[in-house]
Length: 63
Image (cartoon, rainbow, N blue to C red):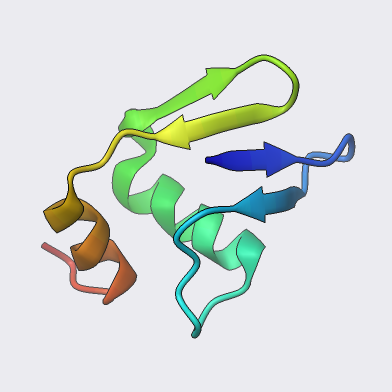
């Protein structure tokens, strides 16, 4: 899940790898899986990823 501040920066994001900050992780997820992001009310949203997709992105694996 992703939660945003009123200024649209990332306030909270799940699955954050140690080598990235919140905003960089969100940017990477958007680049690699932007079509799988679903917005919700109240400045929230989430990426619908399989475990394999998540692990590939977290490891910076292009596949």
